[in-house]
Image (cartoon, rainbow, N blue to C red; front, side, top):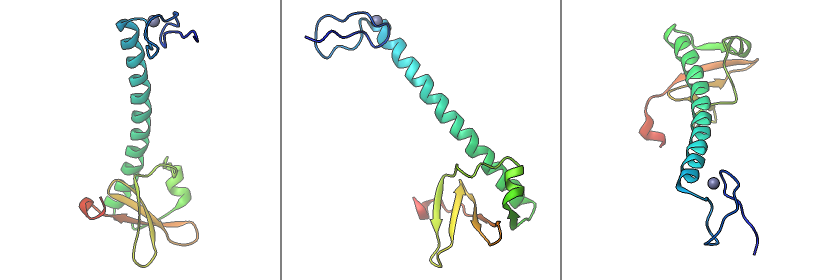
Length: 122
Ligand SMILES: [Zn+2]
């Protein structure tokens, strides 16, 4: 039989073949560590999305309807992160960060969008 170690401390396991931990303590500490890593990941992505949303929302509140890609980039916008994509019936693709979004508007310009009707797209 293959020898297996505790997933947390590595100590050799005895007993049931599906056993993964040598003790409740190790099970808890392993699960806490995984949760912590997952939470860290989710928090990092969430903070990127929040920053993107804040940038779009500030521009929108200022009354801007178009913005150059470089200007968005200079404000710290991260184009890799968005919450969803909506394609209009006319074929315009809009990337959203929550209720604020942008679509390509030629020559590296973006048109800003606001759409808070969540239920329509869920
Ligand atoms: Zn252990």
